[in-house]
Length: 334
Image (cartoon, rainbow, N blue to C red):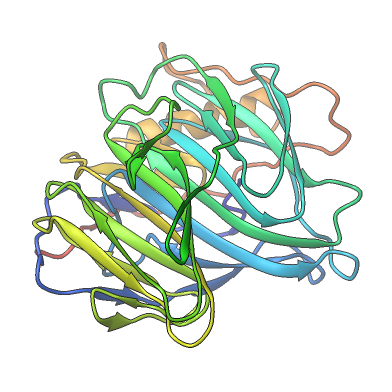
């Protein structure tokens, strides 16, 4: 998915380990439009001023349910990515994906699309023609320095839900509730959709070295005793060996993510993840040159971009770079 903000902030996100084993930090989203007046809006909970990373998870957009018969739906023309993996997970509707590595796939509810950008890739995403309601999440995972120039790749995976008393768990990354996903990641991660019946509870054994996040899609659960509203993201720091999820008087659906703290600082701007201001400038120049916009010299060794085949819409040009140097933004101490 593209960050289509016309004036994206340039963020230096610290990968410092965060503690806070005894508390739950509740993050509220900000609303971000994905285009013109008929376009979708998303609820963005990562990154934000007080929390830029959860493990290597660095970006989280939550959208819908959106009636795409009355809006433009998801219509994101070709755009670039570097240094990250993108994750698409749906609750309703269908999205068609195409990328410059030659991958074409449709993601449906309960299925994972994971694209590894590595040294550089471009892709497009459109709601499928038969979709009426679109509802889901788009997330990014920052690649560690050792893997961020890897070759682009793509995986599609359909996990089989496992059932516990009053609960269902679909594990798409890592290991949750005794179930393991085969999908390849470059840092230790977990990701799962969890549903709870009204009044039900589920205690998950977790890695004490991981940070975790709980995004509530529906219902009013408590996370380790802390109430969390729909659209909010509960953050849990390292140092705990279990997490209790408890539904109130209505069924709950949530996304459970986590991972080992990245322990690296990353620089995010628009759709690029890098390590320095100069690197982001070079990525932008390479993309603009590839699409015939503002051609500028590209330093040796910087990726060259191509476009997915079969595209009818013009690719998205990069926004203008800020006129000032990056402003550091780090996670607070635990």
